[in-house]
Length: 285
Image 1 (cartoon, rainbow, N blue to C red):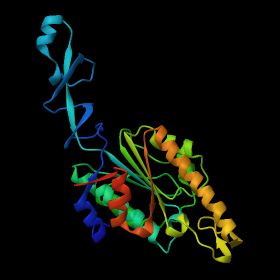
Image 2 (cartoon, rainbow, N blue to C red):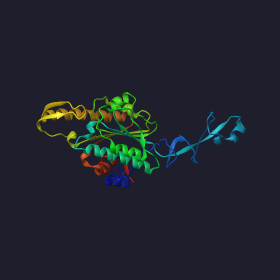
Image 3 (cartoon, rainbow, N blue to C red):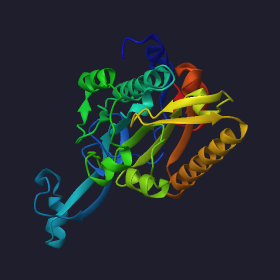
Image 4 (cartoon, one colour):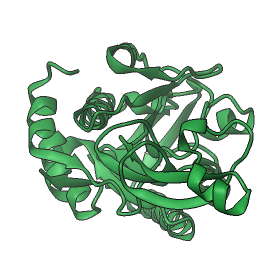
């Protein structure tokens, strides 16, 4: 995906909307809340076995007979973690949804790299998920078949998603699977310094139109059902979708996370320029 022209254009145009409160990570461009090795002094505290003895303040020890260490603010790059829903429902829309999911993953990973960090990309499959970094992570997303049957909620419940503490966590999914939004969002927010929840839908999923009688096939279970797709059926679907989005948004606000609903058919350029910038997930560089 790094050779995708739309991805390249987005990476050149935007930067991550990293929260104003800094996040933990390794040496890099941003100042964090942790104690590190930058030149900006933060505070003293009493020595704890295992502390770097180079930070012991011997003059303070001479005065008080107590070992004290000098703490400095840590120069860091943001730890970014990208969870990508690999379930079969992400293949709908003649592949437009899966393509945009791949593009978004690449954009976030590459923007993290421009800040000196290495994003952890976690493709969600049917078994324990592996966190991959750098080129390996981008290649894994490009190869992701989007055929998993296990939902994100099930994987979290089984503790099969490796979540890294203090990461800026980006979650890309359609969220069209059975789940309790409050429980799901609370689990996704656990330990994260920031959480961005991106619901990716096709235009038809967001706003279906009457089609008459149709045989529908569940993308994940292959179950078939004959359904009359008329105005009344669509109104019920829109009501349920609206309720789901309201509950996801409300649950995100409760944990200070950001929820954004995206229509894949709009294309990466428009999504970055409009919805993602409006939500401060991205900012113009």
